[in-house]
Image 1: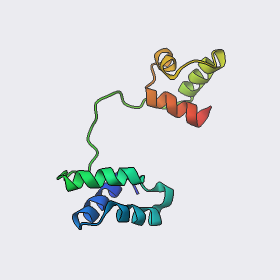
Image 2: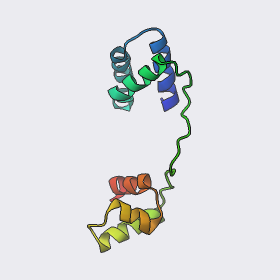
Image 3: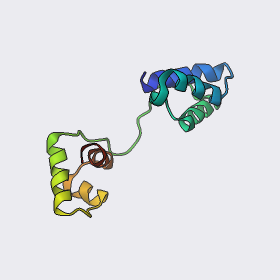
Length: 110
């Protein structure tokens, strides 16, 4: 189930005055670890109770996640091999990759 589906489900259940804890229990029972976190369910439920009607993700300002490619992975890996104490910010500057991409490469590929 994708994010929009979870948002829609939470919207409907909130409109029926179902508590966020119950909604979270239902989602976790069906989707396990794929379900949104409890804090996310609480936050979204609160938004809907306050009148937010849209379930589509709104565009947010900021730098988008850059594409993770084998070249990007190799570039980050090479920089870390040269300096194992390099910071994420330094990696961003040297590679022109977004913070999210650098973090994803480090956590998934190194």
